[in-house]
Length: 278
View 1: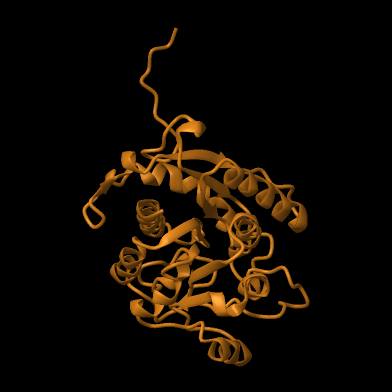
View 2: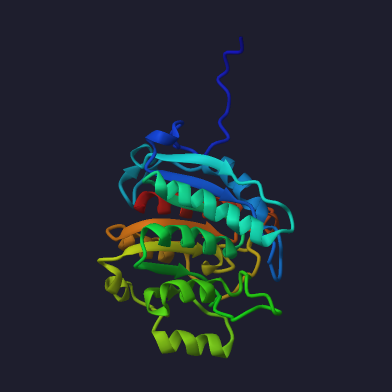
C-alpha cells in the first residue's frame, strides 16, 4: 500500500468532513457571458494550489484557517454553453448549503454566478443586504439584449433585494444611466461608516476582483485603471468582520492574463481574508 504523504489539491486549511464545516467553499468555473476577455472559468483550479503559498495565520485578523472550519467541495461541472442550466445548478447546490445550516463561499468564474447563489441565500434570509466591491456598476438592464449577463448582475440582484439594500464600493466605470441609478438609491459609498445601515442585517458579500487596481490585478476579464490597493480592500474587509455575513463570493480572476501569477496570489489572499470574516 502507498504511504505518501501526497500533496493535497484542496484549499489550504480546509476540513476533510463536510458535516464538520461551518462554511462550504464551491468553485464556480463559469464565464459564459463574458463580454471582453474570457478565462475566469480557469480561476478555481489555479487558486487552490496558489492557496498553499499563503500562511494559514492572518496577522490582520489574528486568526488561523483551522479556526474557520470550512469544507472545500471542489468545482461544479457545468453544461458548456447552457447559461440557464448552469445558474440553476449553482442555485440548487448553494440552497443545499443553507438547508444544511452552513454558510457559502463561491469562487468564480464571472460575476453572473453571484445571482443564483444570492437567490439561494434569499430563500433563508429574505431581508438580505448586499455589499458589492467592483470596478463596474453591473447595473445595465441588459447587455446586447441579454438580461442574464455579468454586466447586469447587480440590476437583477437589485430587483430581488431592492436597490436600497445594496451598497457598492470601488465603482469607477459604467453607463451614465447606471450612475444615475446608483445616485437615486444611494448605493455607491466611499467610507466604511456608510455600511452602518447594514449593522443589524444579514449580508451577502460579493467581490469582483477587478475592484483592485490594474497594477495589482492585471489578471482579470475587464481591467479598469484607478482602483484600490490590496491594503485598502483589506481595510474594508476588516471593518466588515463584526457584521453578520451569511455568504460571499470572489469572482472574475482570469489567471492566464497574468503570466507572473501575482494576480492569482493576490486573489487567493483576498479569499483567505473573506474566510476570516465569514
